Image 1 (cartoon, protein in one colour):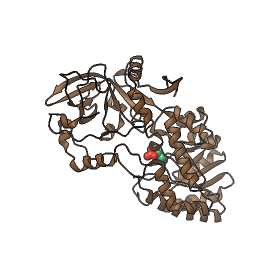
Image 2: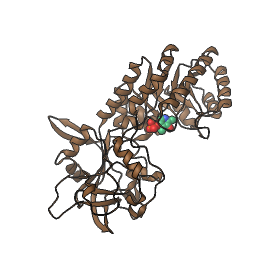
Image 3: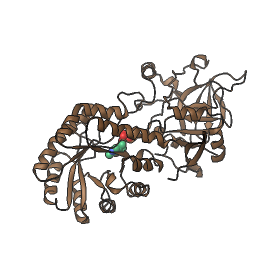
Image 4: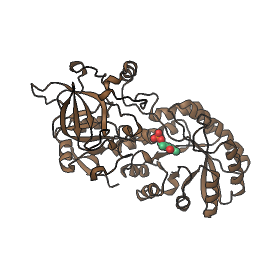
Length: 445
Ligand SMILES: *Cc1c(COP(=O)(O)O)cnc(C)c1O
């Protein structure tokens, strides 16, 4: 819990309390569990809940069902490398979106069938195209040359043609209108071997309307393609489903009152992820379907999508052991065991803003009042900082306490992790309940 109104150090920003799921709050409220894991692991670790991932996946599938639209939800795998998510995709009739041979092999190794995998990514290697075709994966073609190389591979394959979105004409991904025409022509010529299953796109931003607009346009293109003898049964609307990390009022106040002074050394940032949005997750898919769902139904077109972050919403958090806390002017510098690479946002020149929490909460001695602190990693780099923003803590963090970063499963955990300083990578710990008590295991990857 934060207590910014009691802090005497100047220029502390408002709290940005993270929204947390019941399971995460319960695990963090257990008096010993996180401390025991920290003791066993001996360093930072990520806690993951595959059950929450499965619930998110089911919500996306329910959104399709409610609109009467056929389709498949492919997990955008790059958002987190744990193996546990893949087991849930296999069990819950999901799919996986991969962009490399190791990602493809990883998904297959967890029981996801080739037919349930879509291979995206630009200018894929011929080896990846061959492997994907052999496993009957759906392949999103990004380039005319790539299509030729797939034809040369000589294995029957199912493809989507990835479209350069009109809303992002400078994107390096997808086929522009002229390239798309040529690709379609080629698909007609090679339709004995290559099944043109439809179109795909992936848009920046988190708005339902542009996705609905482009899907609508591509449904017309599917009808044209069918008239030319192509299958064209599906449209893949990509990922970019929004998440909500903090409450709207907190986010509004944060943006409205924003000051560089809230950050250690008045550190300046140009952009932040939109930590409050609406609609989010499966509700955003529903919002897309409210706009174009009926066209999918009428034309018998399947809707595919590739959410990464949104399937991981509330499915994990990250824990760092406190190694020190010293005064730095009017506030404090906390050092944690671990590196800022385990909270990736910093590596995009930005910062992960939901408030980190001190564990155990409370537990303050009488002479141990509230403080404000920024949080650095245990490397020798000045810029290895997890949180530049001065965070209000009820008491000074002490050696052996833990700092918890909530809701980190989507892109924060392992996107940028490295073994810098020869430190081991933080393990991912699954929490189970058995006979009414918690047990835990390490993700098998
Ligand atoms: C990254 C990516 C995704 C997942 O995006 P999210 O914002 O995590 O939903 C899906 N499809 C493609 C092609 C991507 O590059």
